[in-house]
Amino acid sequence: MTLNKTQLALGIAAATLSMAMVAPVQAADNKAERVADAAARKAEALESQMQQMADQMAAMQAELGRVKSASAQTSTESAKVQELDHWMASMKSAPAASTSKDNLVAVRGGWSALDHARSTGNPLTDGGLLSNNTNPDGYYFGGAFDFNVNNDLFGLMDDTSFMIEFGFEYAQYGTGANTLTNGTLYALADADGNGVGETQVNLNGRNGTSTDARLRINASPKIKFMHGSKFRPWIIPVGLDVNILGVPSNAVSVLNAGMNFGAGAEYDLFRGIVIGADTRYHYMTSKIDGTPNNGFTAGGYVGFKF
Image (cartoon, rainbow, N blue to C red; front, side, top):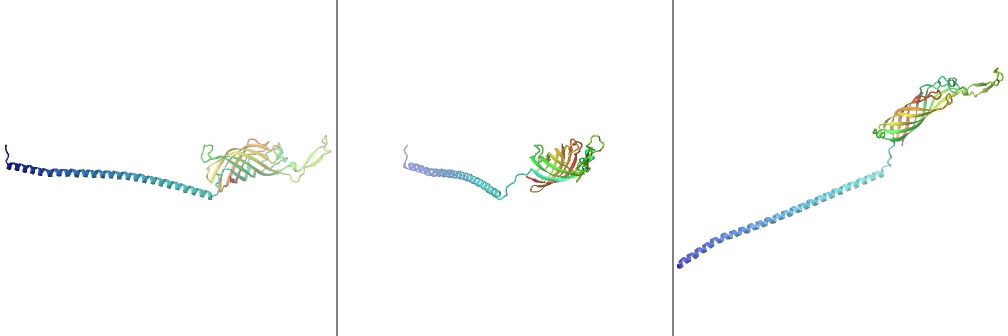
């Protein structure tokens, strides 16, 4: 088939027109792809920057936490150093610290009364050969040492002190007549008993009296309550007494032993100086050859802790 010139021209024109219409569409598609690619790259860049910023913020927070911790530790150490400096300064300026004072030395005295007077119906006393004192009341004075063992009663009771007391007391109950120093004693020199040849012996009757004085030595367990308080009551459940008579008893014995029971209280007046009240009953397991020694004492004391 033979194409004429007119048909050929029309075909070329149609092809050219088709190409002209397709080219702008392809160009637009290429541009959109390029824009999308650019946006994606920008988003990736922004995301990377955001990640970097997050990492930097985390690093900054970690560093800030470390600085705060170091600052707190430094502040704590500085406070400790200041506290130590303050303590050292106070220790240097303060007087020497004293340890707890629980031992006690005391002087005491008061009234004493016997259950029975010395004169008991025995010939050597009522007869006046040694002493016929009928006065059961007297006075006493002496001293004592309290040695502190513990302050919890061997773990049985808190704030309760167990002590051992060593003490002595001098007591005086008056005077009585004494024939050995008052009067005349007669001795018979002859054997027939007719009175001839009597010898008179004067036994120095200047005084004629004897003082009923006694010394008591005791060793007793003492329980003091309310440790750490200024006011402290105490008791002696039972303690040992040893009595020594100033005027010999009927068989010239001067020593016997017994027990004492006591109670009292003391108050810490000022810097270890205490005042107290003391009451006791003294019970002897036996008389000294007929001479009674049971009795009651009541008095006060002044003590010094150390």
